[in-house]
Image 1 (tube, rainbow, N blue to C red):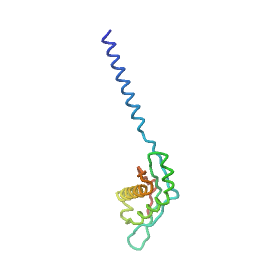
Image 2: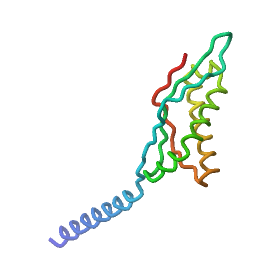
Image 3: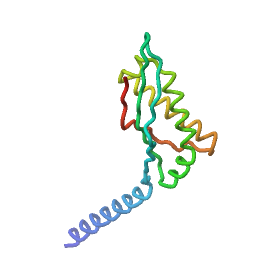
Image 4: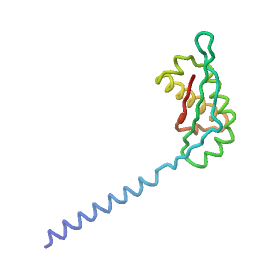
Length: 136
């Protein structure tokens, strides 16, 4: 009987210690939020030959906290201008390839964070999502 009681006590202590660890881990969870740019961003890119090429994107910036949305919204015109500039510098091959799209997105994210660091002292953008990406 004593052995059974000791085993049961050990099992209960282990269960409580795991639930306490789980509670601490939950406190660290971020509350991500998204800011979507409206209207779509439309600009030309460098095309081969005489034709004019354009790209149209809808994008969202993911931030760690809903509190950061107001900051992103305040700087949205500068962010939009930065993205338009980057898109306008791209070649047709890069715009139309999957790997190029990835590179463009990463370049935009880095430029946005650089801009936000200069303006606010913080790199607030966790991710940049292209929710629409159309080219012609």
